[in-house]
Amino acid sequence: MKHFPNAFMIKFVLLALAVLLLSATSLRAQEAKPQGAMKQETALQKQVRVVASKLRCPVCQGESVYDSHAEVAVEMKKLIAEKLAGGASEQDVLQYFQERYGNYILMEPPADGIHWVIWAFPVFMTLVGLLFLYQFITGKNQETRERAVEGDDVTRVKTSGQSIEEMEL
Amino acid sequence: MRKLGGQERVKLNEFAGKIVVMNFWASWCLSCKDEHHVLLEAAKEYGDKIQFIGINFKDTDEAANRFLERMGRFPYPSGVDPQGRLGLEFGVYGMPETFFISPKGVIGAKQIGPLTKEIFEAKLKQVEALQ
Image 1 (cartoon, chains in turn yellow, orange):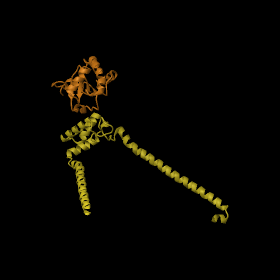
Image 2: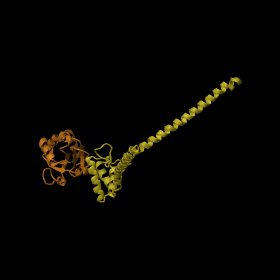
Image 3: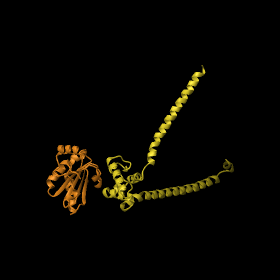
Image 4: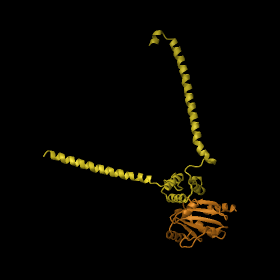
């Protein structure tokens, strides 16, 4: 009689574990669904994703057409798909929007004309920063050497006036 | 393009040879209310020398007609662009937007946002200068 509650408890724990295991398996299967959907992306969908990611949503804040759910972005994605399916190249589609909206529509402005400044500026600033860093480090080393020399001189001057007993201390 | 409130067609090439003022508007657009009287007055003043056309953007005929009944009907036709495809063709950012097109079909000026009388006249001068 004493063992009955233990056997019942074991059965209960086993049942609870089975339920948990089933739940976890079900959750994992649900989580796996979007990944499966991603794998089923067609060649056209992939092309649309690539092109739409290079275009800026005209009514959003720094969001690409691909990432945006704004109505205009949704319509743009449809148009991109139609144009690509109709035989237009990725470059043709990008050019189509560039002609209508200007360079602003491109997530990455072209490195030509005045736009090269945008690309060159970070490189220029990095070089300036490195130059300052180099000067700071070499200047600091020089200063440290000079102080070290001064320190040696002082030590020499001090030790010269000390007795042997003091030096041993 | 289908004309608002009917099955008749509006053909943009019919207006070749004249300056065309193409205004994208919608009943759901609050700024369109602000510029509505500007367009009505401009159409009255310049209607004989330039062609006005409205493009009802991503709207329904019912909502658009209610808007026009409340605000005053344009004395010129409006075509409908329910999917916003013509808007994309013109590189429209949002409502309202107005294009000033030269008689040769070149966009000489455009206004993003509501028109005022001063803006309208300045943009008109820009497109006239192209001739």
